[in-house]
Amino acid sequence: MGFASAYDTSRLKRAVEVAWNEALSSVDAESCYPDSQYTVQSIREAILSVVYATIVDLSLELNNARSAVRTLPSELLTIAFSNLPILDLVSASSVCKDWRALLATTPTIWSTFTYGPAKLAATDRSVITSPRAMEDLLRLSLQTPLQVEVRVEEPGPWNEVFKLLRRNMRRMVGLQLSIYSTECTDNDVAELFALISTPAPKLETFLIADIRDVLSKTVPNPGCLALFDNIAPLLHDVVLRMNLAHLIDSSGLILSHVTNALYNQVGLLSPKLLAKVTNLAPNTLDLTICFQSWDATDEATHPEVIPLPSELKTLTVFANGSLALCVPFFASLRWRDLSCVEVYRKSDDDDAFEQVFNLLCDRNTNMEPCVPSKPFIIRTAAIDWYMTLDPEDIERGPIIHMFDAEQNMHVLVPFHHGNHPVLEVDHERIILEYRQPLVPELFVHLTRMYLSELVFNPEILQHAVPPLPSLTHLVVWMMPAQYHKDDIAISSFIQAAMASSEELASFRALICPALRELTIAASTSDWTPDIVPRLSPEMINAFVRAHLRFQTSSLELLSLTGGELVFTAVAAFDVMVSLAHTIICDTRFMAWAANHRPENQAGLKFT
Image (cartoon, rainbow, N blue to C red; front, side, top):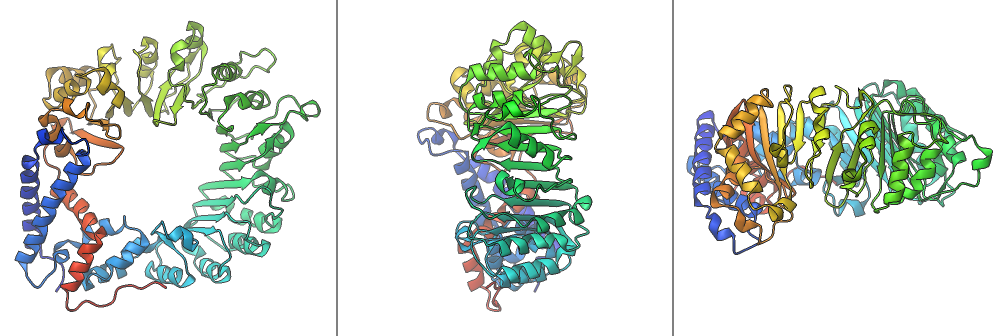
């Protein structure tokens, strides 16, 4: 007996649609208000329980000899299985012979895994801990391309692990080698990096991470690391994460093919050390540097301006949460031709922020003129800082991207330098989110950009917006602060969109005629009893009608596809994909299904 027939599957889909609509109509939104815990997630669970019961009942009605899982088509199971961690897949293989057969004959499901320590596997079910388990996965994945992460955190049977990896390097497309423990010996590290000498013609992404304690005297074997050049020319993406002490002490190793580097310096960073960093990987495109303090003692013996790698496009700086540390750091580098700079900080150090801004805008007369030709980014908690800019700053400043790490909100403020816009046509996505009244000048450059996707706050509708003829995807983000500030901010906009109002139609026709998809998103993490009552029952139902796949941090409320508003029930197949994933992850259901399968045999076993 195999999977359900086409007739059974079609009947099942129709039953799911009926159950879905009935579940929606049965949700009493008004009863949600007294209980602040009754959130959108609760509504989702209530609906799923109704649909789940329907699919189980119908499955048994179709054929009492089958378990409910037999009615799930193979293509749907494959999608659900592909999102499960390794250990859950092993459990799923013991449910019935059909699931076991599908898992055994779908090699792509087993082609991505992590080998790590037992303590990591205790919390991450995607981690395997024994060479035998790795051997099983490599066998089940047949000849499909592999993506593997190896985390060396404790002594183990590394010889066996390395032997298995070397045997399969020819089908490796992604490899991450991470060293986290000082307990690893030089021989362990040498064996790990010796993998690089094995031919890997399909390898596209390679990450090396040696982030052992900076106080450790152990360093990678330079000869092993030098083997990196054997395969580097074949790679599309190379990421290097190294402790500065380890890397620089490795006989001045030059990794000429690194495209993305993270140098983690726990202690002091000085101009002399910085110069070594910039010379280590001359072709680096994206560079991240972490440091806790700046040592200026060798400034007198070092050139005033340190050149960056010639191909560098993006620089990200973590300076122990203090932007003040970045001022001498920035003053020591030549920024000409750098396309993007990212600076992360959490403290509200406005004076230092202004100094950094002046440095990057060539306001410091002691620096060589170096106005960047492309945007740079500053990520900071001072999300409203741009409101205090002087008019001349707006006229000559480049892009500032402010980042609030606490609330994960972004503000991208476009400026221009003279008559030359900083924003270029290759920037296809821009995020505009505001807590303050909009600055009219911010929209000047939007018309010069061929935007395909735009995310913004609905307050933009209260201002004149230039036409965006190329815009195809529009996301309106409703922030929790607005619920408190304006009782009608969310309801008026959603209801206008749901009703396909004349205002929205006019907006689409005049501003973005090519718009294909509109998504209204709202945070659910900060909902409180005084917010929820402001949402009408119709709006609550609109939430659950719009899309089944809810998230805890955000929620898709509405989609506008092909120019027509869609807010009714989602496609039955999407419902079933989510439902199948729920069923498969439910260990109680697995046990129930297994007990009802007399022919059940042992599933896939890893040791």
